Length: 238
Image (cartoon, rainbow, N blue to C red; front, side, top):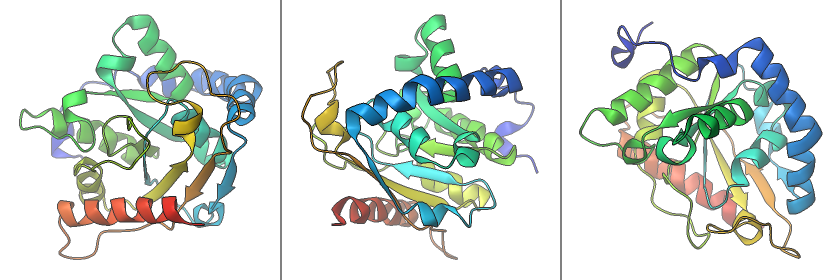
């Protein structure tokens, strides 16, 4: 099937990052460098991985966001067969502002650019929100799992912010399940505005929840609220 947003759409600008050579290099970088470094900084525990075992179709991972450690931490916490098929929505103005930074972001994190004003949770009226969902929808249809941060930006104080409807709309349009993820403690290790991890910060937790789906008659705002509540509940788990 073809989404209305994708009609006659050109190839995604980061399609090369999903080629076999790029995937192989990305896996090597994560295994040899990135995951060991992040694990040494965060000393994480991973909870709820059993909820990922039954996954047979691409899903939308929806996570809170308070640190640049969040994405590499998630890659390391996911089972390899899921991590190898994960794409990440990344702010275009921040990560794709220069060709070099954009190429590195696409390669290392399999990222595709998201316009900040239309990021998941910040869908605008100028069509950019539809373009973002169109790109994510195409990737889901190609068999990729999609990671989105519905807050649209990193939290300044570590608290869970408001969710927008972008991720919920994507799930409703594709019938994809959403997997809530709580990243607990990353703000203390590498808060917004810092470049060096804080020594002695408490250990971090990565908590995966049960996949959730929209129910008949549920609109984007209601499903968005249910997504956020799922993440919030995971954050508060003992």
